[in-house]
Length: 156
Ligand code: FES
Image (cartoon, helix red, strand yellow):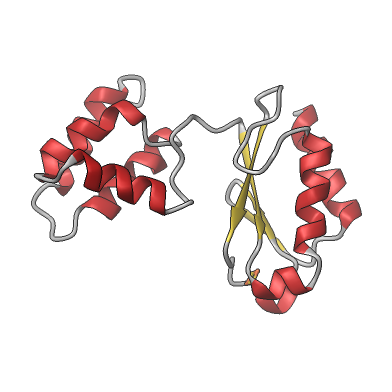
């Protein structure tokens, strides 16, 4: 698949998923896996390719917080906001991350190095609070550890 031509890539992915039952979610995941986000101007192509309305496609993209409609920064930091992590200080970690990065959740810092996102359970509830940096999970995250991780990401 050719990531340098997003439109072609999206067409190829639509072709791969078009005959699949309930194709929309798997297709959106595949597009985001390849491009890092769902380009808003792809909504029409996706709708046509899956024989859905634009409103249906747009509704699913906006319903699931997992889907991005803008390109993420170089790294994606996801802090778990589900119950077990909240009980162990996840809100304070998120506030610290926002302050350190100078951006709110769902935003990217000014350097473009880090996008901050919430996530709802990473399967590490017994070792909360938890976070994920790109594909790497981190358990029992302290404020110090978060600060160190963020400064390494910002320096990279
Ligand atoms: S609640 Fe955070 S990992 Fe499960």
